[in-house]
Image (tube, rainbow, N blue to C red):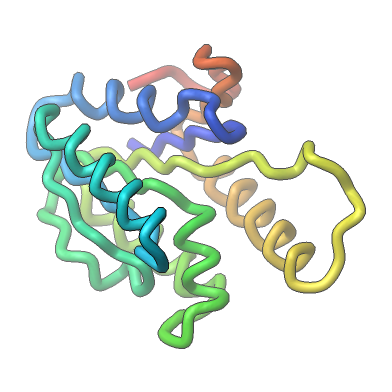
Length: 170
């Protein structure tokens, strides 16, 4: 099953995604995509690791090349998050661009039992963007639409409340 959770910053999408995966039987894998660029990122990553330690997730750090992530067949996977992964693939020297993200998602979808993808809704903050910011926003919008089309379930998180847009919650 493929589930897409989308929402703005602080909308509760990550916590809700973790709750969904925790209800599923079997192995749980959390794919973390935030690259530790500075002390603030490292502290945030450490805080997230501590939070996940007690809820039964194995954490796999994967900043680029999602297709190569060591994910056991049939696992319940939470990809956190699509926008970080896309930024890494577009702007990291090791990145493979938007197509690498697509291939990675397809590989995960074929390998795991349940795939839950968290993505950001970044499009309601204004419209006067140009250059690389606009390129990133358009690429994320394209990926969000592609995944939503294929997904069994699409949920928009608003103020911690799930709004199911497609399908049924797992």
